[in-house]
Image (tube, rainbow, N blue to C red; front, side):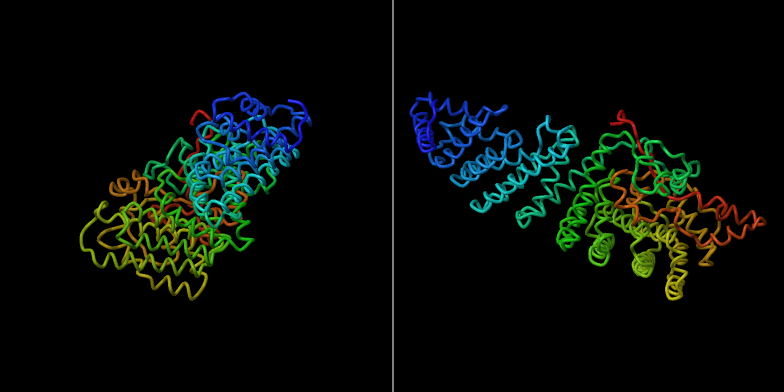
Length: 566
């Protein structure tokens, strides 16, 4: 084809489309050939392709879904990443015009744009360079502009876009860099002009993806809490005592808290999850700065209740809630706690779900540095009141199955007090409130929660309660068969969802807001500091050796750090 003007080429494109419907595909095939040419175009070829694309934009009414399938396939197969700005602009114009011309093309056009959420494999290394990042910005700006353009002319497009984005979410086998760019696009949809229509669904899909990755991470060992094990109160400070791994020395953050703590090394799924968690935390921080966090949190809370709360193997995805609450404890945090209390106290929900809710609540109240002691005490009072009221209406004996929500509530009370008892007692008003709580009546009830709950929690709680002169009990409740059966070998009863965070990169968002056991001052710390060498042996046997006790506090899981575990 020799030189022709833009007008002549536009006319030629229309004629080619018409001829193809009549059976003559000669000029139509030449048109397809131009569309397929994308490798190292010279300036004339670029100009030709731009003119053809713009001509097609003016001839969309001539395009027939039956006779021009190869043309539609060529358009949908073009990747913006492979072209310069002029071609990208012309292609985006064509896609938007085509989608607006006929409802039959909407899904094709949306799918073509969403396919550009993932950079081609050959771009992955370039994305690490400034020119690669500039290219990514050029592509994504045009993709999201086109999506908005289609939504403006096709009202139902956002609902179709939601479905297509969900269907195209990369699988676990896709390269981390490609997955990250896809999630970046999802978050751009959530925070952009389309957020009003698709924002909630993007949050839901993001949380689903985080959960999917989370449950793929395999742990070498789940530590069951029985008299022959170290218990859940041993491993956290054991991890603090290990030597510093050389691979940790490249971290920008201070080493004091980090260098002694176990993190997940060499687990490719964990590394991908780590990067996505980091991206999610950064997005939430941006939402907070722009005043949108409360709006986003509503979707997060719904997603948490429908997916995360019931995920038995979730270890990290729940920290999205923890971080959001740390940004806005008064609004987001209060909503989170209220929802957990509501689920725990309502018989509408299954027992396992209620137990999970109260363990989330206990873990949050214990680990969140940003919560005031007075607020923790208020919520603790609610838990105690529930447990006391439940016990008043029961006269039977131990029944782990029938009363397991009650036992979960009692264990939650003890767990929170293991972390917070001393700080509560340090404030006169709160001390009075704690002393007035019917703790002794709850824990000496005929249902005997001290015999059923996890021995290490019971022992730590009683040790602190004794030191604070709350109450004392005999030493025959530890390590009973009941305790091992209920606590040691049922998943929900070794479930502390906000245990120390083990992902390296994204930990920077969690650590400043997190209470590690090494930070906790117990009620017996002063006694330890006095160095009383003459402590009665019976008391050691009854409440545990206080000199060793500070080396025993929660971390229930051992992480698998080898790719083979996947």
